[in-house]
Image: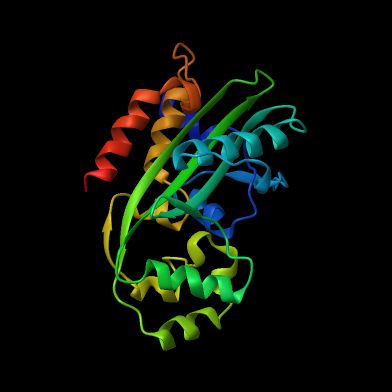
Length: 222
């Protein structure tokens, strides 16, 4: 079996109840089962967005991996960043409206971190992707209409680029699927490295600090 064919033959466990991540993995041709993580996301607070999504995705994957005898567990986390502030999922309708007002007429960043934990070896790899998104100016009635659908309430930044809010974004720089909730190309590349047994894949939290710094610099100078 070739290296690439072996990737699709792996037993994968998605530690997420996000229907969007499940749809994207299926779109890429991966077979997997779903075992949602119930890790307390509020228990982790990092100053930098990349560390935040990496630590959360790693924690989610590790939690589910504790009950897995064999296979690769996939954890993921997505956040929206504006004015260097992390926006997670809105607590209620009013907070969703406030988030959308902040995003209107400007750029923001979408970060998604993901982690792979192989069992029983407990090998782990993690990485993240960042995409720049620009929203056009939004009328209050547009915000009200969108929030009334209840769709924003389970999404970081109070919007899903794949639903009715698609008409809000007039410019995207980077991976579109990252904005949906899972960077397929980056994930696939990481899987290739991960399945190369002679390659020591380390967590991005500690292993690629220089790479993270370069990405941050690129974002800040956009």
